[in-house]
Structure formats: structure tokens, C-alpha cells
Length: 387
Image (cartoon, rainbow, N blue to C red; front, top):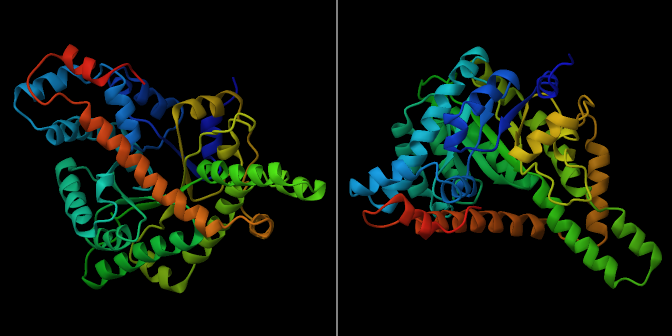
């Protein structure tokens, strides 16, 4: 029997995390099976994932019924449900955390996306979630917004594991890496240990192609010049992977400096880049492309359910598909700029849109809860049909 593809993939030095949380996956043993058989090494969540899990299923009805009867508020109901899920997932992943010497085995929980532009309250909520979860192998997710960057630095200095989310550009990545390193330096200067502090920098992939492709296609439709049309269409589906490959080069440079070597000698981990938004949104592209085209050591790929199944079924091992590609990647992005696409504007739009989408999922999720005692059936009626 051939070796499990997902197990083979992780021999490249890339860790596979599951971008999916739902109570049924914990209760029925499916997540435990994936950890054991697929060598799954982590789990990520976000408000959209929890909206789908809670609003789109009956998994949580009994627990919700009990919380309503206890007089809990909407915010308290949400937090109680997700805290229980995250703690249980953390416990399932604890053997991975121990076996990999704290490199993997993490599950992430996001602060409220309504706090994306509020530094102080992001810090306060992250501290509270970290304390309430009470698990070493949890990461608190903070977005890489201008308000999020100083929160990341503060929380790292306090020894709280952080998954920095909604990174799209090299400029933002540089700020995130600096926040992590300076937070570690602050912690080290205070005489605190570094070896239990972990962080990943979550860079979004497919959303970049979705937005840039739409601009390229629009320009191609309006062009009457055959060579211009060919140049525009020839760039379709290339920007996102090129962007990631350049960011990976920047990551290697950042964490090979003498500055970081001092921290590493004191026990610090590198802040691994994590590829997020790896599901293929354009049916014209291979459904595994944002996984198999982005393999490299010291990285994480967090993969949604449908894409994980596709990779396991027909993914092709190509080895390291990032190292040594920075020059070609820069040429691609230069060509994208040359045809009139403003990449800085694209990245700004994507960051703002990402915050807005998570905030919308958050509001829809909280709006779906009943506000007074009632049956789970009434709650389901309020929630509407499953997603």
C-alpha cells in the first residue's frame, strides 16, 4: 500500500493544519483519525468557520439550550460554545505538540473581528481568551491591521502564542515579523523564557488571484489590441503564487539574521509563514494548486475540508516548489504592475474586505442566537436553513 499522500507531503518540512472546526468532527472521532492517519498537525478557525458550524448544523443545540436556560447573554453563549470546542481540539493535538517539541500541535481562536481597529481591546480580549482556554498549545488570532501590529508585539512579549492573520503584502509581512521579533526581544530583556512562545504569520493566497484576475479580465475585455489581450490573459492565476514565493524569500532573510540568532540561542522559535485561503475558488484552476505549488520547509499550509480531500485523493508530490523561485516571482509581479494593476491597492482592498467579511460572519452568528429561553427547534428556526 502506498503511503498516505498527506504524510508524504509533510516530509518536505511543511506542516498541514486543518482549516475547519465543528463539534461533530470532535464527537465522531473524525478529527482524531485525521491527526493519527494523515499526520494532521494543527487546526485553525475563524468567525466564518464557526458561523457555518453553529448556524449550519444542529451540533450545538443541546449545549445552546442549556446556556439559554442558564440566562447567558448572546456573547456568553458564543464564547462558551467555541471555548469548549477549542479546548477539546487542543487536547487532541497535545501529543503532536509534545512530539514536535512545541513546533506544531496548535489550534487557533480569533479575537472578535469587530476589534480589528482597536489595539487596547484586542489585547484585553486576547489575554482573557488565553487565560480562559488555559492550554499551552492554543494560538490567539490577531489580524495584521495597523491596530493589530502593536497588539501582536505586546502579546508576544507577554508570552501569548499568536496566529497573525489577514496578511497579503510583503510590506505587511515585514511589519508582522518585526512585531514578533521585537516582542521576543522585549520578553528576553525582561528575563522571561522564550521557548514556549509560538507564532505563525498567516498569508492569504487564493483571494489575491480572485481580485487580480478580475481586473486582468476586465482590462482584456476592453482591449482591442491582440498583443495586449495576450499579455493580460497570460498573467491570469499567476500573481498569488508569485506573491507567496517572494514572501517566503523575505521570511528566510528575516530569520537568518544575527539579530534573530541571538533570540534563537535563547530558545526562540522562528515565526513560520502559514499559507491560508488555500482553497481554489476558480474552477478553471486545479483544485490542489494552492497547496502543491507552495511547498517549502519551515512553512504551514492550512487547508479547508474540500481541498484537503482533493489533495489526499490526487495531489502530486513535487518536492520544494518555492525555494529558488524569487527572481521569477518578482518578474511576474512586475508584469502585473506593468499592465496597470495597482498591487498596493489590491492588498489594501483585500485586508479591508477580509476584516469586513469576518465581521459580517460574526454578526450573523450572534444574530442567529435566541435571546431568551426556548427550545433548540426555535433556535434552528431563527438560524434558518443550514449553510
